[in-house]
Image (cartoon, rainbow, N blue to C red; front, side, top):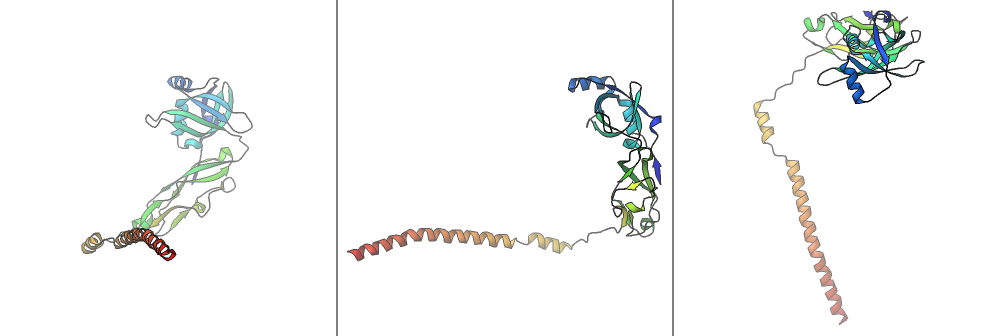
Length: 251
């Protein structure tokens, strides 16, 4: 079951154009509860902004998350947008920067939507299998007002070796178009793999077994090296003897 994201009219993010940039300016903004941002996309130009950090955090923590459609308040002028990207401090978790994508309400767009499963698969409960989630989100195309919050799927009937694929997701195909491959596996129930333990004697034998190929190879190289050295020493002597023989012949 797909749930729609909240309407943009209900959520407003305050934004103010900013003319200065740099680390010092960004630090000053964060101290006042704001965060540097960029609004781009659509038919408008890119605008550097300072937006309310608390309002953006509320959107990220909401049920619809980054797919939430909202209005950016630019001094009374509202522009619909969604969160395209954001940067947080790895230590404190505080927002450092956000990218806002301008949205045209009559133009279809591509978004990633999370997939959540619920219920205990019969393949686990009855057949002793293991349930694994393989893919946690799918890509779809739709109008901004039709962006789903998530896809919720009941996997109670999933048997051993059965799979949940992208094509199995419940969606209104008149409004939503699936862009992820229909055959993409989202979750499945598989047999628990148990590695067979080798007998202690076999393990001990493997540990004690010498690496014969390495030794033979190494010995071969050493022998080749010795033979090469002997040949090198023998060559000058042979040449000397040959020269000596020639000299005797001349005499």
